[in-house]
Length: 70
Image: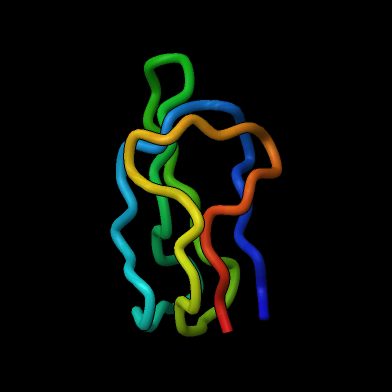
């Protein structure tokens, strides 16, 4: 299992994955807006999404859980 966490403080503008989604390394799991810039958060390895921990529009802090991969 691998936790994918926010790398910055901001707002979640897009979550393009759902539970059960198969991802390859480098796929976008979330897009966070920070200081008017949209920053994609990428999967570091391939896997299946077992949990989406945030919703679009949510405020996140550095280190907050976004997605869990199996």
